[in-house]
Image 1 (cartoon, helix red, strand yellow):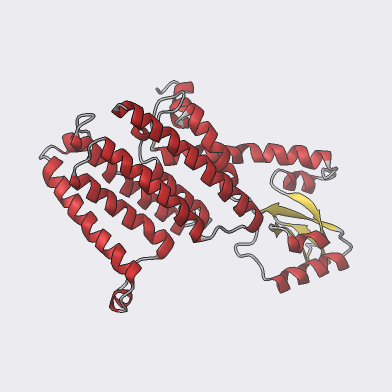
Image 2 (tube, helix red, strand yellow; image 1 turned 90 degrees about the horizontal axis):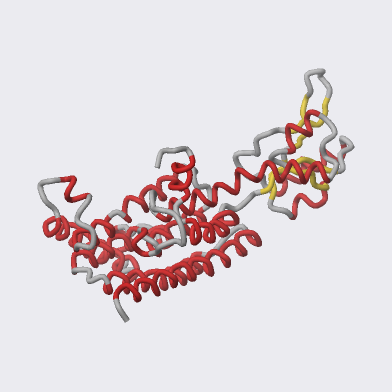
Length: 328
């Protein structure tokens, strides 16, 4: 088997693994709204194996392999945390292993900089395609991609931990477009960000779907209903405690001074406790309500999973968008 054939096999293996992993993750996230770390650890083993085989097939030198160790060590902290001095003093095997990988990774980055770097920064960042320097730079650039994902997670731009861990897995499984060629399209962004954009496009269609659904259910009877219908649905009060939703209706003081039901556009910043939620539902029932506006807790993985097929077929969405508006 030639190198190109082997790379093609690994490319399709990557995509098969990605679809299988995200199908299971989307199912668990919709059912339980949580995915155990053991799930990601199991799938990450296969992702690491495929990446290692790809680097070996492409003839990666020891500095590149050690740099990949730095990437894996950094990514692993999302699952097992960051080693501390207390953990190391306690003799934690996992923390000592990760720390060792950090040391190996630092050696790889330093050695790669000396071996493949030069005084010309441009030449270093854009080395000759197919060279060892290019392979090392491709490997090194996975680190800032992971860093951006972790920062987005920390600042709640990516709300769910499972969503962030899924994207970190993609960063390892498909670190760049050299590892997989879609059926159409040209690369522009790293594959992990392309997948995130494809998933995000689903949210653009969500308001239209909710408007149609509320219209079919007869929930558009006033201006308030129209204001709520593009992002929420009505649900019987007795079903709300058992569903993954945020309650948007509450009993409050009206401008007239009376108590009445108001519908808020924005869900609460924190999920209320069962006791608080039940008290709110009791107030709504006493006010004569039989159902209330709620917004679903939509897991991002529900949208990212279909995005894997769009990534497979069309590649990077930004290349298509820029082409449509005439910038590419």
